[in-house]
Length: 107
Image (tube, rainbow, N blue to C red; front, side, top):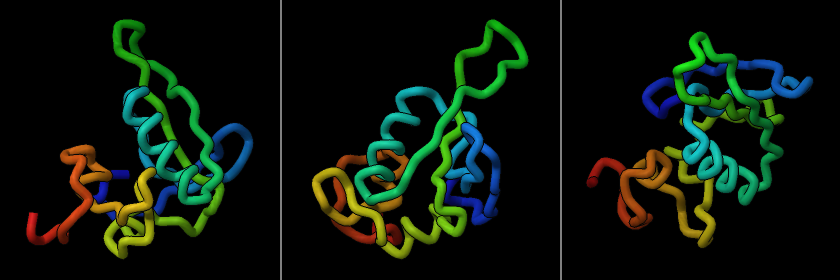
């Protein structure tokens, strides 16, 4: 789920009910988000999505087993930490910058 949408989606991933954090993402993005969420103490589940056409690249769905988790709230309330234990900002979450200083409305 992108940060622009606050919709809360529950889906079964690897046989466990999970809150969907992001879907339709590439492997690099999946690894980035998975590391951040695991660093913050969440149990992360991910699986490869079914392709509609074999020529399309692989996409993944990523979720956490905490079904009340909402990534929009967690990021904008500054509850998540980066791997360096700095406060995670929306622009860092979106991988637009490596800088973790400043507020999202001043970027």
